[in-house]
Image 1 (cartoon, one colour):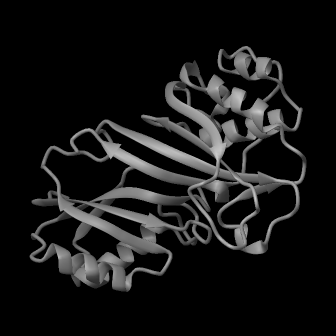
Image 2: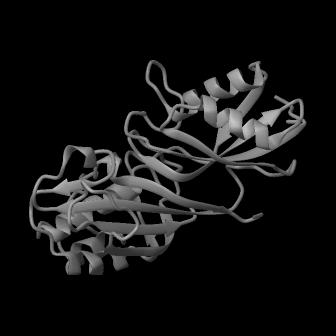
Length: 261
């Protein structure tokens, strides 16, 4: 599709009832719901949308972006955003819409992504926590997990933290920030008294990378792996197979920054 007008639209969504961003046959996804709503608001299907990346099933986003390609210019951007929100389902919200330059490419444009993962341990939480927080029944050594999180910072071999990588997948990645901190960002009357945030930032991540990193940190906190073993895994020298993938519902895309902004 050769479009004359390009727009960058930011949205946020609760991913608990969706099978991720990308369209898939016979399941409900964020991309499907966004395109269906756009078609209704525009009054036609002569458009194209492209997301900045895929997100897994049940993963949420406080800041996600997609590109909208149109033949005709949107005449009233503020009103268009209002109509988009009126017609989107309640668990998806459009935050911003702005014109993008012709050479902007949402996939290839340099960007930094920050994800957070919410977790707690001990007593089983209120059922309303299910879309937001992963809770493990075992006691966790949070101080040891904080040490483990710092090991992921820097340039490492993350092949062990990628679900079924292809032969041409570049598995060496640089993580600029990887820390565990008390959760002071999200509160609710039904949340556990104490919960934690794993915060991680990089230019890009491999398939299931963050959830597998969280899986190792949880195993570390339970005493089922060691700092040394995690260090070896980041050199491709680990002796234990890494298979633990943390649930998707604790993962949130917190912020995405594009270089041109």
